[in-house]
Length: 213
Image (cartoon, rainbow, N blue to C red; front, side, top):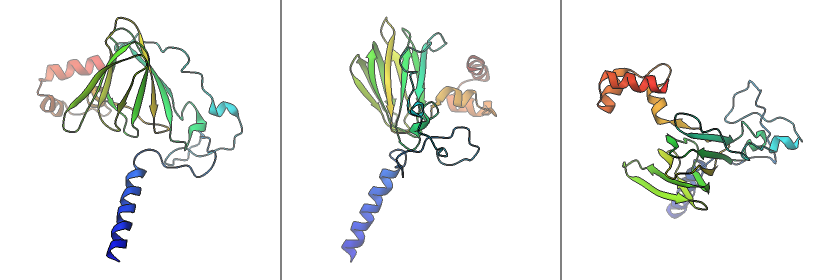
C-alpha cells in the first residue's frame, strides 16, 4: 500500500509539473478566440468559425520598423493576431534588429522561448536566479533557448541588420520589459524604492524615467 501511495504521489507530482510547462491542453479540435467578448476566462471565449483567416497571418513576411531608440522591432504572431491559436499552446514572433539594435532585458512569464536566426549575428543571453549569465554569440541558422520566466536579451553585434524567428509554448506568452516595469509603471514605483534598489541618487532615477517616458 505504501509503495502504491508513493507511486501515486510521484505521478501526481509529475502531472503537476507538466501543467505549468506551458498552456493547458485543448479539449476540442478548435476554439477560435472571440477577441471582442467581454467575458473574461483563462484564455479567450470560443466562437463558431470555419473561416481560414482565423488561422492565417502574413505579418512575419516582412521586417519590422527598427527606427526607434532600441533599434529593434518585435512582430508577434500570437492569439491576438491569429484567433485560431486559442487553446493550441503555441505562438511565434519575428524580431528585427538594426546594426547595434537591442531587444532589451525582459521576461516571458508564461512561456519558454526558442529563437532561430534568419540573418545576422547576435549576442544573446539569460540570467539564472543565481545571477549567472548564460550567453553566446549566434549567427544565421543557429538556435538558442531562453527558459520560461528568466530575464534575457538579444543584441545585434554585427554591422548589418539581423532577424530571428521566436517560438513559444504559449498562445500569449506575455512580455515584461525590466526597465519600463520599474521606472515607467502606473502608478509609479516610489523613487525611494528605486534609489535604494539600484544604489543611485534621485537625479539618476528621474533621468531614467524621463528617457523611458
